[in-house]
Image 1 (cartoon, rainbow, N blue to C red):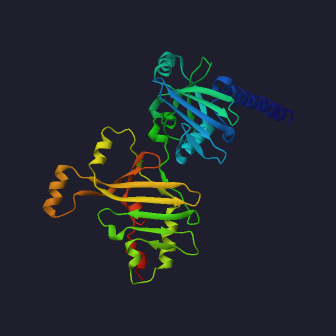
Image 2: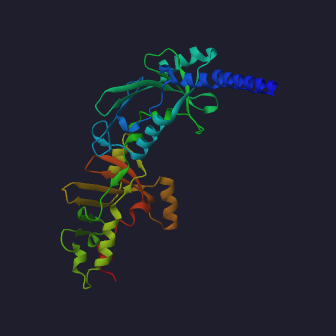
Image 3: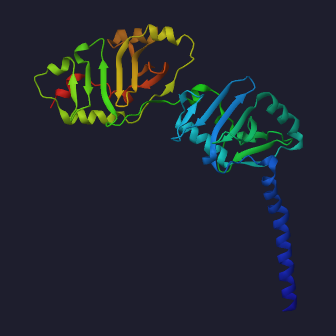
Length: 335
């Protein structure tokens, strides 16, 4: 019995030693200030500033309604905000960069890194670090905290990939793709002008007890289908573009030569206006020849260019997203 007790005590001491040297030392590694890459309370974050070595920068600022503003002017894409906040919350130091790779990684961080500066809601800087490249097998990224000497391989546990793309400084990656976000109660009017088919242009007003329509279609002998009009007003709660096209060379001249499909104007009851010009995308010469032989139209039918006249942004939109919005006035007088 006495020997058994001795063995149990020795085993306990051995187990404690294993825990202390292997696990506790690992805990200490992550608690070191040079490895503190994790922002556990992302709700406290009010500003994120990203800048690369070429001086290209992105400023993201939280607003009072918890929406984020890009470069003090543009709405930021909610999904991208979620991605970067999740990354800041979950990224942890996996290991210090080994001595054999130290100089290479330091040179990488000095030449190709993006600096990430995080501030709280009062504008006080919380922490800053530099991030670049990817670790072995594209797993994790290299980071070094401002003022630190030791770079680390940083990862998100359970995520098979590297983190550098989360810290992109490409403007188009951060700009919101939302074109319209109006509930039926917010809409004062919807107007669509079809230059090639003016007889089906219309304006639907939503300021009275029920919607009314003005324009050529209003001359219909049939009564207005109120149920259809009310249903139409529910289509504008979350209308998004496929992509942002700002900055593409020669895009202005391309659109100037494109055929205008329609002008769309949404007027909100708070007097904000959304004005969109929607253009057919011209096909290439080869595609036009093929379509001409088949007797088909000579415009791209799956996607359109969309110029937001309210913000001077140009988007790529999908026809299947907008088709139910671009109704013809006569539709509202059908049974």
